[in-house]
Image (tube, rainbow, N blue to C red):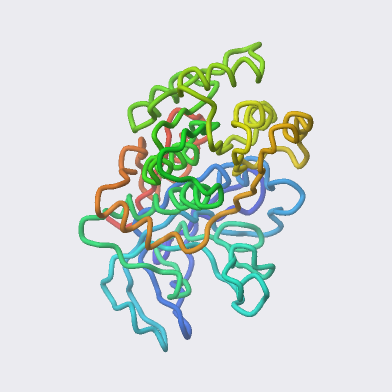
Length: 351
């Protein structure tokens, strides 16, 4: 191995390898990137452990993992004018067709022809070098670190969820799940002006971490508790039923909790990917006229997220709890799988 372009390649379930690949060259409208920081997402771990997510995204051939990325521009392709060699950047992992109905109406996250890093069959960016469409690459201000740049991806999920739920100043908010996405939803809700944000989880350590990074309230879901009882606790700590609920766990319990907890006329936004089919307490849902909204990835959030971090309105830096080099990718994935950390970050730069 000459380590020209060390890359983390998933061949199949439980078969993750570090291999050397040629450095890719940028085409028209693209830039070549020297990768700096790549965060490990739960989906990366899931593909590694199971080789698939549901019946739609299945690993059928070698693919790179990693889609939470920051980098330095090393080459600029034809037609690229807003970026130059040496720019510090964050990468939005999309690539879209630009001509379908979804793209033309501005909802490019729903493009049926989307390319998305590290989502089968599309390869990711956990390597020394990567080539990406320049219009989905954004400059980082000097006061935004590469780690913060990589965290813009999960933060964008939270920002988009708040937009989808029409969250506004003064709202009481419930966030189900204290993983990285739940924490980013909590941080986003506070930045949107929420007066109080309660985070629920089954893990007391995660809830303690959520309080440290900004949650105003937390509720531990104890074994044997009912969704209705937890909903009452949420209303008690918030001083009233939440106006908005953001579900980030994918668990059936949290889906039920969202319906029972959200105030009549409120909005329940679902982000978490759980079982292909879940049940809803339909009588409560209808009687309370709760609006259920799906939230998938993000649209036009990168510059907003960069600006919010740069101006100090959102602080994502504490979410990184463990750091590894690209050569230590297997250890990094084992740590992420263990659940002991919050966000595991890989340094891709050659030392």
